[in-house]
Image (cartoon, rainbow, N blue to C red; front, side):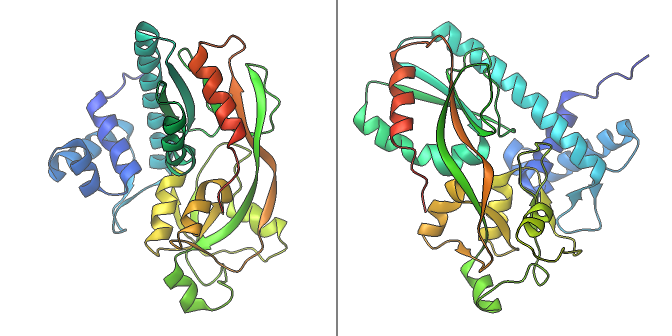
Length: 297
């Protein structure tokens, strides 16, 4: 007989710790006390039968088992939230609204900054942004458009090329100043984003592709790109910056190239539209995105 699932509050508490990076931040996010979060994580560990947080580190970080469980929880909660939002939109659906799905990083650093320009041009339309933990969001019920990174050979909608991608190591200006013209990957903490998607470029793959020696030094590991970017902004290490997403931060001087070679990746960003458009708003926003898809930086 399969074991029953633990209470949802335990899963939610642990997911908040993994996502935010600390018990303190998770408590603030969920508006509860830190002891309540710690107790929930301990109860979940008792249910699982192994540690989920490495408490020898400050702040405590998920263990390997914790990373696996956190990804599963975030994926599951994301799918539930997406289904609920799709049902709500389907119920309220009108021709002036369009829903676009994309990853958290694309939404935060690429799409959202562009929406002001769209609203100035088309104030009669409303764009709902549905974020997903994956860089290749599905065309779920209620989703009109999806922004995906990958090979572009999908069959669940009309595929339109948005832009190609270049990856380059980035860091905070203060970190670059301490290391001179080139920041050696062996001399700093590398900020990793753990992803199961084959199109996601890892540090190991970047170093191999640019002909540099491998780095054995352990770095920080995050479950999404936004977390890694925040760590880089705070000077905690060096990240692999995707130009389309981090370009605006570089243009503002908040992140700078680390002096290592940029790498053009074989995959690209694409806009996927439903075969049957849901309304005028979807068509207008898709056309606007394709016409304004120049990558920042």
